[in-house]
Length: 182
Image (cartoon, rainbow, N blue to C red; front, side, top):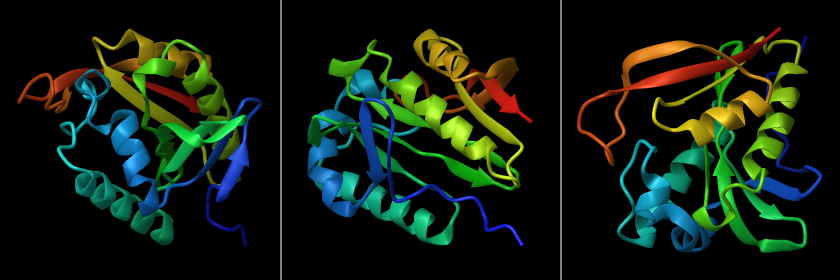
C-alpha cells in the first residue's frame, strides 16, 4: 500500500531552505509580509494588524499538516536561514495538490517562487497517487501566472467570479487556473 502524499518536514532547492511552519515563525512573517498591503493585494485575507493574527494562521496551518491535508512551508535563502522570505502552501485535495504562495516584496522578481514551485510540483507528481498539480491567480496578476508557467503548468481557462480578494473587492473576481497533469 502506498503512503499518502506528504511533504518532508524540511528540504532544499538549489538556493533555498524550506521547512514546515511553526507558530514561532509568526513574528518573522509578520515583519516580512503579513502587514504589507502590496504583498496582500491578491491574497484571500487582509493584512494582519497584530502578530497574534499571524500566529493564529500558523496554528491552523500546523493543524492541516498534522491532518495530512496541507503542508505550509517557510522559505529562506540557504546562506540566510533565519531570514524568512515567504511561504508556500500546498493543499491535498484527493489526487490533486493545489498551491498558494507568497513572498515578501523585497525579493520579488528573483526567480524564487519559480524555483520553489518547480520543486514542489515535481515532488507532488512523483507520488503514485497524485495526478494533478494546480494553482490559480487573479486575472490581473501576471507575475503569479508566469510563476505557474515556469513550474510547467498550463493555463486551462478562466474561472469566472471564482475567488474573493478582499484587498481588491468585496465581490469574487475572475481567476486564471493552471495545472500540470500526468
